[in-house]
Image (cartoon, rainbow, N blue to C red; front, side, top):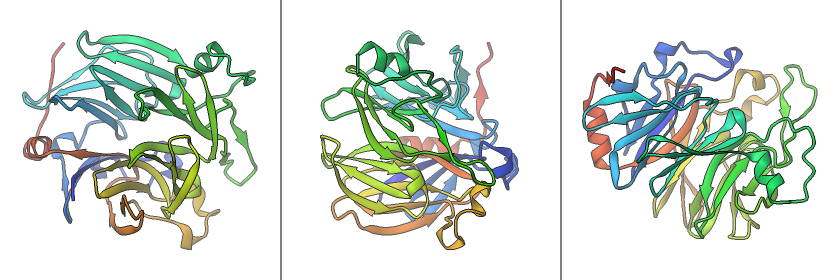
Length: 326
């Protein structure tokens, strides 16, 4: 079993909340059958923590976005110093990913791709998802788009960048229920270089991961993990029993973050189909569910990461963080 970092937060909408902020442990680590709270990040973030990223060759520099994902910070884990970076116009960051020395950020609230150069400590490029499609003549009519809800930038097996979106056509449709829940069902992926759109008919997809020459992705609202081949043909589905977001894997296990059913949905979803916060662990070869671990002191799981002993030992020993003075 790997050591798994769990990032979580309060729910974004106040009407979905049942905890107070001081009850939330936004960074926890699953090590075997034990869960450790990372005390030094206990109070960091208005709602909790959304996403982090680090280079494999520089694990001492951790880039972190506190929930609700409207700012970017750099944490020097060796010196225990946290520094807010000068990056403006951030909203609802979902995931960040390193490719070489570039940090790729899904600036979800603005449907934007941000490329941040860590060597220069500055934004190198900002690209709107609507421009990715328009500039590459995909043939799809965009019109007056509402939003794509781009929540991840990932690189395929050939090293090409793609984005995962809730709405490949930039639309958001609605159906009438008591609380006005969104209807979602045109989620898919977009080739950032070509502007090619692949509609996978997913409802609120999250967390594309590369596993054994396949792509695993949450069909979150339908409570499945979908498995696709290299051409994005569906080859398998596994039930998650809840809303999936945040995943990581090793050669043996796939760890899937499942968030508790939100208050808005309780009157719509049968009690037997409601879920707690948990991590479901699957065998990457057989794709069978092996076990599940309940997670407390958060309202939603935002991301999961496999960490090494260096990060684990540092974070579990630090009690208070020093903030860099400007």
